[in-house]
Image (cartoon, rainbow, N blue to C red; front, side, top):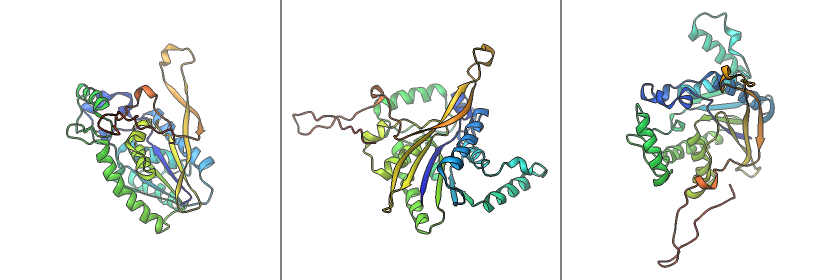
Length: 287
């Protein structure tokens, strides 16, 4: 493919209030109003700046509600679903919209292997906060949440997804691929493809809502990092306290490198070179 672009979902209800996870399943969390704006702007960036006109695009989407809604927001840049508002039946309206998108060269399928890291079923906020503190001490990659997954578990299932993706490339299914997924999945996908060490994985900051990581073809059969795209937000308050901290999307920015955590938040391994000499911690600035 010419490009593989990984997109984190837009702002979700759970991003605004973690307390919701106690009563609403993680997979059912929907986008907020800002999340929809982010998805539409991401679609605009994809169509106007990142992808060429008339090239086929295949979307692979996590089946969670927030990622599916992000997909809908993104593809509205090609065809707005409001064009089909005259169709009263919701299922028929969706079918007509999907058929139009297909005619425009867009195809898609869901894949649960790029879903969110499993933190358990209904999540008690106090327990999750305690677990996240433990995770920072234990190691982000290895810590497994009770009744859930570790990042290393996500790595294993993402590895099988990449095997399927390579076979899809061989079949030349599409010129461009867009993966709409979650922050941890993007970091793991990068670590798996570029063979980052665990220390390099630990350096990666979680992508922001609707941040896009862009991989381009290097002309020699491999993918290279071409940069990332972030959305530019602005407060709607303009000094008015009644508007609170409500934000709006006003554009997008491009960056050459991945976002790295501040050094104080990076947990480093201590690996000895011999039984009596402490080795330097393994780090890399080449990401």
